Image 1 (cartoon, rainbow, N blue to C red):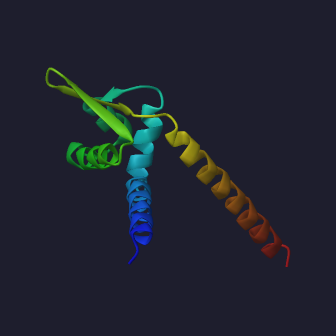
Image 2: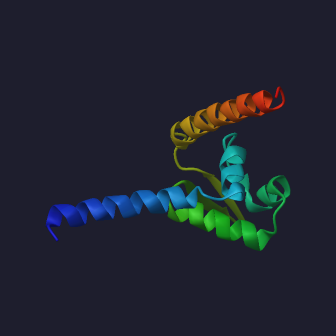
Image 3: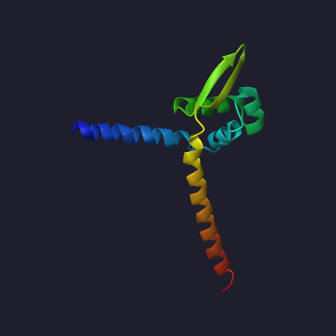
Length: 114
């Protein structure tokens, strides 16, 4: 394998790992909640309605992917978005899904007319 091919494979792996970190509804919800600013883990548990242990795993995955940053103040850990540019990734996905659902709605509406 050429060095260039190996480098390209690494790039694909990094991209896949990043997208995998986004591939859970609770993680997407965390990102949306943090759009308004950093929050403590306790506040996130209440807003996201998941157990603290489950939330901790999701927060770690998002932090490892470089999407979140954390800081500790005494015994409280706070999380925030590393970069709001994450929404430049998520916005086109929402637009594509909206289009897909509109097309599905059109098809379902035609089925009712037969």
